[in-house]
Image 1 (cartoon, helix red, strand yellow):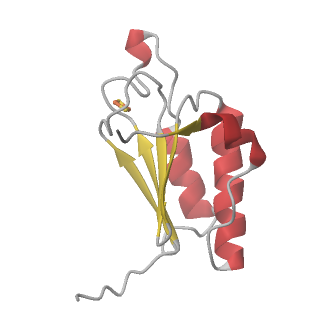
Image 2: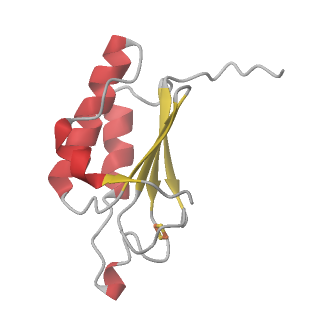
Length: 117
Ligand code: FES
């Protein structure tokens, strides 16, 4: 098995594709630049991977966020409010401080998404 020196506690994939963040199609904005700035300012870069991605699939529930870690993937849909992104940043900071992914904040419970058949 290959080993990487860039091991992280998790990865947050923020979709910004044909639908997520497509404000020209009246879809909710994805604050990608703000997220990247926060990730850098809050010292998350080397410990929690942030990936702004093209379409990840479930376009009918924009905006989609996927959280990956050694324990699997958690998919979230309809992340439409700036405050939700702010909560995800705070959760990422607390997770990095704890050294492992904490449970997602309760406010995301109704946003869980199952993309698999
Ligand atoms: S553009 Fe985000 S799921 Fe397709």
